Amino acid sequence: MTGRALITGAGGFVGQHLRAHLVATGWEVVGADLQGVEIACDMSDPAQVAAMLETAGGITHVFHLAAIAFVPTAGADPSRTMAVNLQGTIHLARAMEAQCPEARLLFVSTSEVYGPPRALPVTEAHPLNPQNPYAISKAAADQYLAFHEKTTELDIVRARPFNHAGPGQSDDFVLSSFARQMAEIEAGRREPTLRVGNLSAGRDFLHVRDVVRAYEMLARLGVRGEVYNIGSGVSLRIDEAVEKLRALARVDVTVEQDRARIRPVDVPEVRGGFDKLNHLTAWRPEISMDLLLSELLDYWRGVITRNE
Image (cartoon, rainbow, N blue to C red; front, side, top):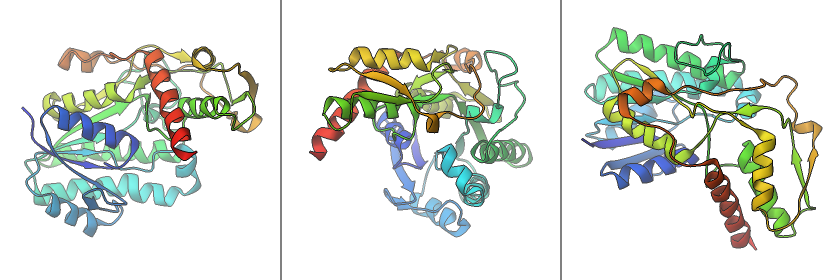
């Protein structure tokens, strides 16, 4: 079964990949974001959220991706982050209850809500311990929706994805930053030195296409009121990712640590379990890290070529 889906944050990196996946699998899709895809909506404004649902009309599912998602940006303006990420989610849930109470809401939370892992792999039973304004806003929205689902008739499923990357991702994020630097070095736009931060950290990385495939499965098959991790179960050290990119590069590249890129406190390893999701849907990651990095590098090569 598919349906008619509204994607909030449809113009963003993940939103664009989700839209492409939904259309390819038979969904009818309408998109909304701050700039306007089909619909312009500032999630912090309850009147705009209500108008978004009215304009969308006849939806069976809402994929709620819209958020301030870059940790430094969220930290620089925590009030705006709370207004969009927390209050925007509350506005959406209340508006759906009033206007389309039979639609399902798939809320995209984040693995950041767990904070430093107490045990690995991180499961859905791990306590929430958010460590920055972005994670705090998402944890609060996540828990509000758990409350809302129990106290109203609204059908809500929550997803907590771990790190994901792919073509189109901003170079604010680590793998995309490395790939852009590599492409610029190849094009002679910067010296042949890759600037990096902490290389010893291990992170759970997924290809964005694997993640949006999980979102679609959860929209169809997720159990109302439940929360599901989307992770790979394994971690990749950042220095391994760098070496994989160096092997893909068309020129020799040296690596230099940049103090500005080193976080004062960094968690040594994060990896998320996905057993709950797998048992429900048979989902598991399908796209290799090598292909992910190759696609990222090719994406930035294309951006640079188009801008010449």
